[in-house]
Length: 311
Image (cartoon, rainbow, N blue to C red; front, top):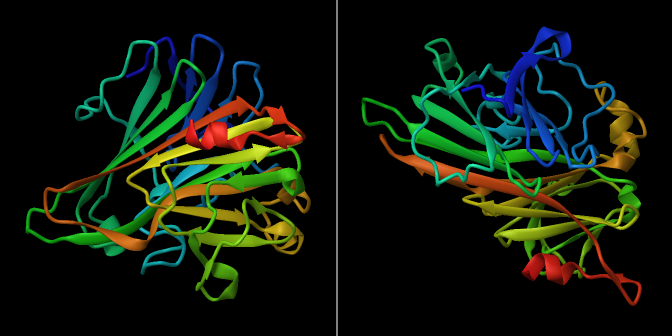
C-alpha cells in the first residue's frame, strides 16, 4: 500500500516505479517491471548501486545493474532463459502479504507479488507464487526478502536455483577487495565451471572474474579502498556467493554496458546455485539479502575488515 514514505510514480519510458524514502534521508527505487531495485542512496544522496549509462528500460531484458531476482534459474543452471524470467516480468504491489518478521515502525517497506499466468506455464510448467519485500532500515540499510511458494493443486514438486543479482557501485575496481571468501571452494565459469579453492586472504581484481563461491558465510565485506567505504552483505537461505566483473574485453561486447564501466561496478550475489531448492506442494522457501554501507577504518595502513566481517 502507498504511504507518505512509499510513492508510486512514473519512471523511465513511463514504466511504474516505487520510491522509498527513510526519514533520515536514505532512499531506494523499485520498478514493477522485474521487481528490480534500480537505486539505493545513503543519507548524503550518494548512489550505492551501479546502473549502466547504456541500460535500456524498454527491452525484454532486465535493466543492466541494480538488484534483480534471478528465478527460477541462476545463469544457465536450468532449462529456462538465462537467469530466469522473474526479472523480466511485471510484478504488482501486494496489498495483503502473508506475515513477515515484525517490522518496526521506523522501517520503510513495500511488498510485491508475481503470479504466473497460464501462458507462462508454457515457459515453466509449475504453479508458484513469488513475493518480494523491499525494506529501508533506519540506518539506511537495504533489505530484500523473497518468498517462493509452491501453489500446485496436483501435488507436483518443483526445483529451482536463484540469486539476488546485485551490482554495487565502486570507485575503482582495482582498489576493491572482498573479504570472507577465504579457503572456500568455487566454480569458475571462465573455466567450464571447474572447481577450485580460494588461496588468497582476500579477493582482488586484475582481470575478468566470474565465480560461484560455495557454502559462503552469512556475512562478507566488500571494501572500496579509494572511497574508504565497506559494503557489508548479509544473507540467509542463500548458501552461495557469486562474484562477477566482465573487465574490458567483455564490457565492450555488451551493448547495454559502457566500455569502461567495468571499472566502477562489482557484482556480488547471494545465491543458491550448486544445490537446487525443491518445494513440495504447499511448501515455501524464504531468502534474505541485507546490504549496509559503512565507513572503512584504517589501521597501520590496513583496513579493518574483521570488525565488519565478524562484528
